[in-house]
Image (cartoon, rainbow, N blue to C red; front, side):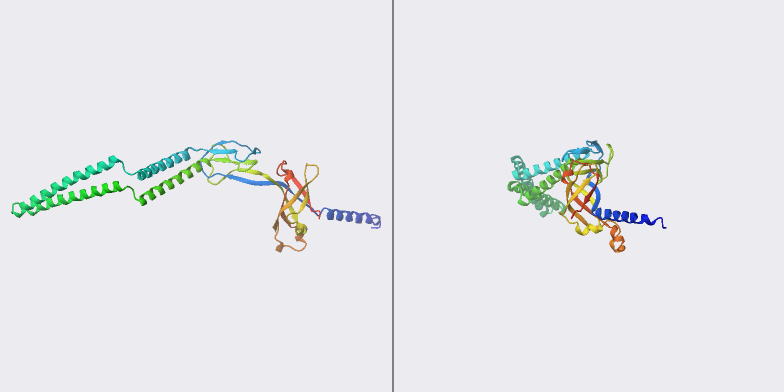
Length: 318
């Protein structure tokens, strides 16, 4: 015990230095360099026929990542176009009105039925005269009357048909035909859009992080086929200790040091989570609350050429 007394001042000095280092480094926050992750999803379950990108490849917005088999959707598009064209032809026919040949045909049919009606009326009159003389039965008279009434009905139907041809289509018929064309045109647009979306393209300038399927596989509708990193924004995702949370507000400038990169660059706090990343605050003692951390994002435009995932640290200087 007595021999250790001369060393006591050195131990106390070492403890003080360690405490000073902890206070000096208490403003440091660690994290990684990140980019927004975009999942590329498919809207069809058709098999994949080609993949034009690979993991780690940089892509420009609009460039093809992969394509699915278009045969089925192309057939649906052709069917929708045919139905649309047929409805459009019917609408044009209604607007143009009946052809002269159709009108003459209807007139001839009406004239023929008028002759048949006159003959049927003459037969009925003769049958009535014979019946009145008592030379025929009532069934013969009824048969002649039925033939005359049927001939009159056919004549009236032909007269109405000729009138309809001469008057042309009604406004309601034209509206119905136009609505049919509009509906089928929308179906063509949808079929064409479904066909175009069989090609999955990069939505923004970025880097392919992972291709999740191979050629020949059939992804389910809505499944992710690739993950892309958005190169438009590079940021640091850091963890803010509980004791620094009150001072970390959006707009705060921070010096950020990235592993393997000489010097430091300035980042600007864009967002700080209001929820602790670990144990909820109400379940912790006062001593344990110092272990809490809050997720934050710091914009780093100068790090746009650096790879994602690099470790870094930021320091709150004020």
